[in-house]
Every structure is written in structure tokens, then in C-alpha cells.
Amino acid sequence: MPRILRITLPLALALGALVPAAGGAVTLDGRLDPEYGAPRSVQTTQTQGRDNNSGFGGADSTGSSFGSELDLAYGVIAGGNLDLFFAGNLMADFAEFQHQDQLHVFLDTRPGGQNVLSAGNPQIGYFPDVGLAALAGLSFDPEFAADYWFDCTVGVVAPRVYAYEVELSVGGGLLGRTDPGGPGTLVGGVNPGMVRLAVDNSNGAGVTTGCGAAAPGDVTRGIEWEIPLAAIGNPAGPIRVCAFIGGAFYNAYLGNQVLGPVLPGICGLGNPAATHFETIAGAQWFTVGDGPVAAPVTSWGRLKSIYR
Image (cartoon, rainbow, N blue to C red; front, side, top):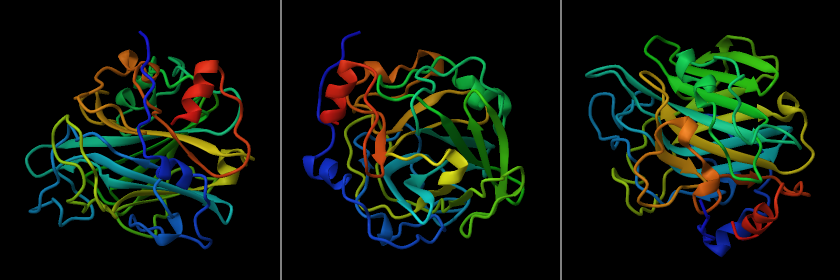
């Protein structure tokens, strides 16, 4: 299927992504810090998931959430860490029935990797049959080949936030669990890299429910990862990131919340095996860090990278 070349982010944002954020360590608590600088990616599409309204377990809760959305993505490399902040919220609704979503974060840190997710990846996740292995067949943009998968969801039993990691084609598992909010220290898993995760699910702003065009506004709460560079092979150059939300309870269905964003009008991606980002206009990834970027794998990838 032919692709349509389209600039999806303002030029100022694209240029801003090349400027390093201010120095200093961020505070890991699921809330935006000024050290992140300008956003690396901005949502342009309403969320297929519900809004996170106020009320029991809604926008007044750091844990539960009525809906899922990815409004803005921030990233900075400082102090030996890759810090990622995803402004938005992750569905964790237990008031009427148990329904959970998960945030998939893929990192492209070096040459090689999986441009198409392998059927041989391990069954790991809150519900393993809808975790990493269930994404087999999903294909990224031509210039993106994933090396690491990070995943999180919010469960029922405290500590409620679950975090997972897999080095693709190598292995991984449960990093551990933590309570919503800071400091994000994970316990009960295997976490030699000392990765941390903080979730503040109380965002009630951002994009609204639907499939049309949207602007996220000023969202400052969400999901925050601190990933030591040593835990991802000490990458020397910029790190490419692709993040999207999928179901975590009944099936591996993918919604329409992706950063970089999919086009307005896409109501849901559906079956992961039928999800092919290379057929969707724009870059479904963003970059964190400075320095040389490895050459894209195709001439189209080079052109798309220039106009992302």
C-alpha cells in the first residue's frame, strides 16, 4: 500500500527535539518536570478509549483511570539514564468490571533489531497471552527496528503498578511492582538494571473520546520511566522510541493512541498482526538524545526521517 508523505508535527517541535533539555535529574513521580524541556511527540488524534472523568477511581485517583490516552511524550538523557514521560493516563477501571490497558514502549538503540515483531518473542506480561508475544507480526516504520520492550499496567492488588522488560531475541521478564506515584522503586521481580517506573493516573485533561483530530493541551501527569543506559546496552547515539496502548485483560487489541501519532480518523488499530505502521503516514516513533543517528534501512526511511 503506498504511503503518503506528510509532516505531522510543527517544524518548531521538530527542531526543539534536537535541543537537549536543561541539565539535572528529574523527580520520578509520574508528573512532568521542567528538566524534560519541549515534548518530543504530540498527539493529534482523539482517544478511542474513554475519558478519565472525575469520581470514584477517576481523575481524582493516582491509581485507577476510566480511560487511556497518550497526549505528549517527553524524553531526556541525563545522569546515565534515559528518562521518558508520557503525559496521559492508562485505563485501570475496577469500579464496574476489571478492565486494564497496557503501555508498550519499544526502544531502538542499535543496528539490527526487529522491524517486524517475531513470533518467537517470549510470553511475558501481566496476562502473558496478551503481552509481548501477542504483538507478533506488528511491523514498524522502515527506519525503526526494536531492540527492547518495556511494558506496564495497573493491577488490583497492591503494589498495583506492574513493569516488564524484554531484550528482544534475548529474554526478560517481570521487573517488579510499585505503588502509584513516586519514587517508582520496583520490587518482587528481577531488575538488575535498576529500572524505575512511576504512574500518576489522575490526568483528566488532554484529548477527548473519539477518532477525530485533537490537540492535547497542557497535560502534566502520566507514566514515567527511568531506564539506566547500562540496562539497554549503553547506546552511544540517539534512541528511537515507539509507544502505544493496547489491551491487557481480554485480548491484544490495539487502540489508536500511538506516539508518534497515527492519523485522525483511525479509530483503532485492532489485531497487532495486521498493524503495519509503514502503511500509515507520518513517523510512529520519536527520538531522544543527540549525536549521530544510524542510517535508515531504506531510501524512504531517510526521506521520512527528514520530514518527521
